Image 1 (tube, rainbow, N blue to C red):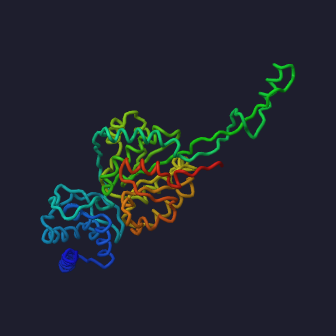
Image 2: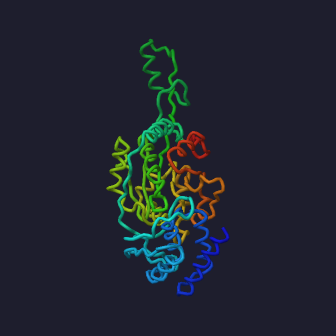
Length: 372
């Protein structure tokens, strides 16, 4: 471990000597990112380091040959893309024609988060038989897991809080004016709306297909469910997920979701959602489920404000992160640290099996019931 740290320090020292400023906060960000999302090969390490340490095309031109010298052939030359101006927080574009070779560095999962906006179409493998069995179990478990709310409309019931005068009067006509049986009405319980927001950025590429399959089960099993994806843009995908067959639904998403496996703009995407009046109605009183690793780039203040408002609008806000599957996980990254105080429950979910386990285990956010 000490040798690896010394190697990284030597790499950072040469970057400074070549004219690329690497202040202490950026060095800490790099080491923190490598700890939270261990790179499984040189390619992943390249993008983690580049998104953390570079802020312009000029920086990238210095960075690439130095990385190649210390870690292998890191001479990937991404095609420049239009990137939002973020001052010191703006990373370099993260699309490329070439990539560093896949040389194993350490077992792990995930990729770096970035702000790059690229038109990418997702592609999804067909669900396996095992995944279909899990999805079937999810569809059965979901209706009972969603919090309920008392309906405003009343229905006939054996017992209730209000006498059904019309029905009592109608029955009395049949019995010569005698009231034999009292009839009651009461408001039934119905499912709260469910709002699912799924991160499809590059850092979530290993998990977003299963998240989308889970969302397909939610749409099929719940009375009122809405699903959005976000990477660099917000996309409403509920109509596509209403397709009955899960593989057909995900194939349809490949034509709709254009920012899959790209950059990350969690805060701006959630702000776009909150800026739409129609979307606000979807969130009001709903169970809000965010599926994301929370690895935000740039300013985290918009993210914190958006999550706080979502928390106030919804009945409950649950955050599922693949990183939280690690027992040692703590929400200390800038993004998660900014939002964790507004979240009702934070749980580890990385695939369909862990999603099913969360439902069956019954976290407080899922099992809570409201009668108001």
